[in-house]
Image (cartoon, rainbow, N blue to C red; front, side, top):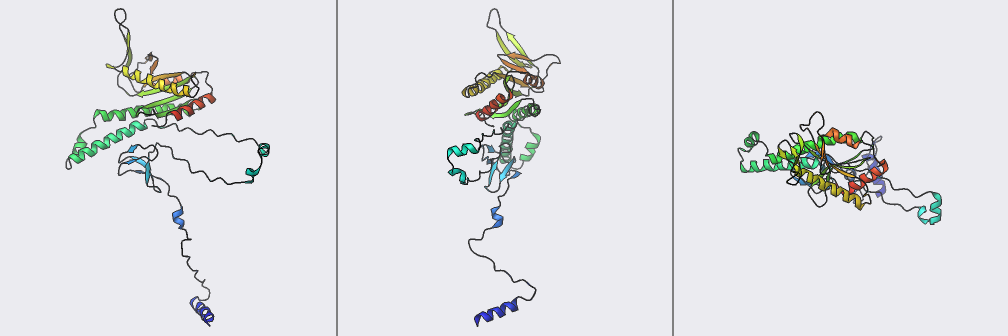
Length: 336
């Protein structure tokens, strides 16, 4: 009797030609389809300061960064994205074969060479400039709530802050020229803005070419670089690097230290026979029309075009060895 009443009621509730409504599944076994799809990262300008999940570097507010909506974390634009997680291994019938059978089926696959992230020229200097600029603006607004905007409008950043922007611009100019040379397929391998381990210092550019390795320090100074030799008969002979009227000899000492670090990294990888040279490249300096390049204490001092010409000279290092050196230095000096 109950079954007939239910059948009669279903016939009345669902008129002819209309499909019967399906019952909605309830319970914990029902999965949310929209929640399963991973949210892609989003490029945005940060409203608040954060810390990069990959390099742990502090990102100031107002800086363009990558916001990972799924984990609610941020990352620098210069940091390479992490590779997707590897798929779980599935056991197959090949695991049950003896070693002799696996050797008969085919040779063991060779490991693939990974692609080296060359880095972004001037990235760390630009981040430091933005960090100092935001910190100054925040301090002025906090100290002068009503006149902060006016003070910022009529005043410039201090020279110590503007120097970071100038240095970043010089690295970008030289980096663009080196990247164009790298993409030309002439056997030149480049690394930009590499961090020296256990320090806050960095190396602007490292170029691997047929003649060896060049450690290039880019500088954007005003004035004409020149070599001044003093002393001789009555007192010790000394050499100074002058840019205009400024004594910039300390730049030579810094370049030599970077060369020693790169040479030590190559020696640890059994590549001690590769020549390593230092270059001080002055971008947009007052160079003469003829000549002007010189060497001081084993460090080349030149302009971007002259530095590129030195990289294109033939040498004993073949492209396979150059790629190996490139990977070795990329792992020894990570991105800054």
